[in-house]
Length: 348
Image (cartoon, rainbow, N blue to C red; front, side):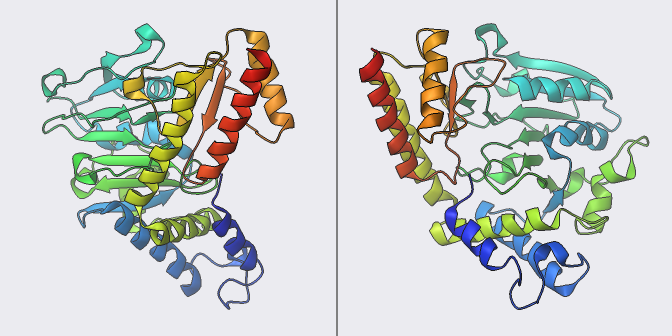
């Protein structure tokens, strides 16, 4: 869900973006008008996340799934070893892709309890001879999140932050590299944000395709080829909206309110049940179930008919999942809780 002010601004500028006489979709990516957009987007993101000057910001394509390969291709170097914490389906995919290029070790895994928690981690668990360590900060399918970023010592920490970037404050300096598909909290699908520390650029394996070399994109300001221009434009509008709101700290407070409201209902419900350990509950993806598959199906059907869409859980786990990303207003969660309460009274 995108913030309504962003959609309205995009609609207003659809035929004429800031007096240029063009839609953003018609602009040359080499034009001064578009350069102002992409440079403005980077400046806003740097401000929102307090990104230090020794980190590069890239707007790429291919989603997080392409980053699963791009990260090892660029970071493995001669060490050829990777440490990964396995907390869900996306971490497993990152692990599978990294295995194509080096030796991969699961530092810890929560698969023993169907990914309903985040494993306890300590610095001594990580191999300091590895090239990097990898985590997934929020797990969309299973509804868990890291409450604390692990200390990996001198080992560069790589984070897939696709589903909770900009939802809460993170210290960028704790990471060597952050990547995030835009379609959860930043904008529409099509652009992927990469934040990478300078010393990790320029070490790509010889087999790395040109388009998968971070150095190429750093040297060309994310415009080695035509970037996803419109998706970056929408991202800029989202960054502006977020800044006007008060920044990441402000949206974090709102996100915590939304999550507390929904989890509070689940904790007191006699019919609905949350599926993850309370200590590791996601602020973005609230997973829950009803006592039977029949009730699960009835709830999703009734919810859809009432205007609450996309509540069906991921096909791999079933149940329900309410994704309450930044664009979802607090009132939307209030309405969902009221609907769930009414459903419970009718079916308890």
